[in-house]
Image (cartoon, rainbow, N blue to C red; front, top):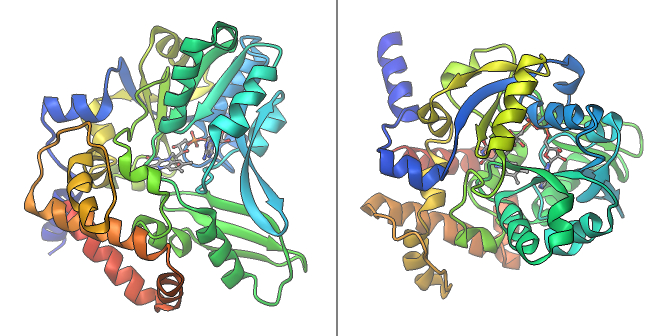
Length: 370
Ligand SMILES: Cc1cc2nc3c(=O)[nH]c(=O)nc-3n(C[C@H](O)[C@H](O)[C@H](O)COP(=O)(O)OP(=O)(O)OC[C@H]3O[C@@H](n4cnc5c(N)ncnc54)[C@H](O)[C@@H]3O)c2cc1C
């Protein structure tokens, strides 16, 4: 029985990707690694293994940069919101650790910070924002000269802040205004933490939020157009490793993909200095850590076709092969995003009992695993 379950689990998690699929999903790269921050304090509040922050601290403290563009959480009028900032100290980098699963506006909020910054900077950005940065650098040589290194985060999609607000409202009943929030910390799926005016700290499994997110409820519409899961335009890409092999490991790791000579040299130096601990891994291992989500993310072709049912014009630049089951997955994702934009839809989603939401998610995960 145990053997059958293990085989079933491995069949769900493991996919054999062709060389062409790997090239399309990942883009150009040099090497891949599974790593974590050698300094334990950099792992405490990290999204994964703290590798991104460890690299930023290393660049800063070795004088290779004067600051790092990161994204911290602020509480504005009782709402948790992401905010770009240029961190100039180890403490500021640490204060901005963790993933912010709410819309960010890179062109309006991050580019001006970089343009005004007097010094060399490293940048952490989502794949779409790294593409914006690359295009802007090509037009503005002054900005280009300031950027020492770009790290992108793997990204399935991002969510509208209204989802965070709904979850916070539910958790905070009777505790007053929100004073602190973390979308996700801790091992494997992780937990979210919300602190309120009366001093209460509510800690819940990350699923409290991510079940809705993974069903594409409250997804940002721009994400339907995106096929860049791993962040093509950067020196190093960084993400989680959702594979059973790593679940058993007591320390959560970050998957790193080096893409440029500068990125490769930095990871090698960080490993040699003990700033990062880890090992080189084949690209198949990294992609298998995203085996369910990356192929659907890449497949704009199916979303462009199904989008017509919802009067959505989605431009397809992938010309990806489409299987019958992909139509169903795309239909669910687009339907869920669309209904979460309507008032009755929002009400229905947020009043549906959690076990039913869970069941719906398992159905979607099952389809994505085929
Ligand atoms: C919206 C979103 C979607 C993601 N989707 C996936 C996914 O599908 N699969 C996957 O494997 N990984 C995904 N990630 C990346 C993953 O959650 C971790 O960020 C990554 O593994 C790095 O972990 P770390 O511990 O090394 O980083 P940490 O040491 O925790 O540092 C993370 C850095 O990212 C910055 N940051 C956080 N949120 C944002 C943001 N919204 N925009 C710009 N910078 C930000 C922080 O300020 C910090 O500097 C996603 C992240 C985000 C924000």
